[in-house]
Length: 407
Image (cartoon, rainbow, N blue to C red; front, side, top):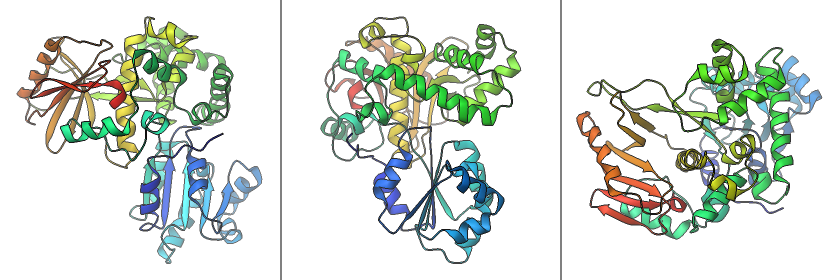
């Protein structure tokens, strides 16, 4: 099994020179423990709260736990003992050295709440995603995706070209290190195990007496609706639960980083926009498994081919920001007149509209919808069609054509 260098490594190292505590959150099995162990030197003690004895001590007597272990320390799965945060705060206030505490855990929302309550101003929080296509297939240092000619030209040099067949192979395989590194070769067994572990451990902790079979069906029903405006009632109807139960279960999926949302873009001058978010999964390989696509070729020609490509693009752009610890300002646009833009990003005081298409030669007229943003209060900058075109191109001076492999 090969170690895959992560784009977030430099940010972890630099922040460890400034903050006494670093917290890495993210979904299960995205490599949080692996990257921190890789970066740690021999002086750093490692403790995992998957160890039930260590967890018991950390919960019941956190002061003794802190005395029993030496600094610097890496505490893994820290969400199992929130009692530790107050004692880490005391250590930080009493002069803990930069980088003394490395923490990781897989319940991002809960950990963020704990960090903000107990360690505000003393902790750097980083979100680790699954592997980006740059990390798996590319080279050199990546940057956040932006619609500038300099950024796009740089991405030509650091990302690996891919045709439509290769892109769907990447989508189908997914981006979890267990598969990408070659540690596991049977994709179906891997994702089945991933789901069972997630439901048995994370879901059972967050939901009392949940029916695990129905919850598994619920995840599958959500996966069938990627890239769509969220309709809670339809998902609830599919699995025979109430709308309130479906809302609660979606909240669990979001809190544990299985899904995420794009919120609709609006401002006080754009009054006809719809209010519901669009639903996406953090990993397209998991979606392909849940929706029963047995090969990349079948997926590329199936009913979900456009939606899963959109999910892949949105997720990859999101990762490019997380990997360098930058805020990810991404929305979509849809109004009551059915005008729609797949993605809208904001940077340097400008909006950048993005349209995602499976075509090699998407019609230039697709960018006409971008003009709706001119009615808002934030100026519109460069836009792009992200598609299967093999090379970077342009429609005009305001709109680029960007290959999917370059995101």
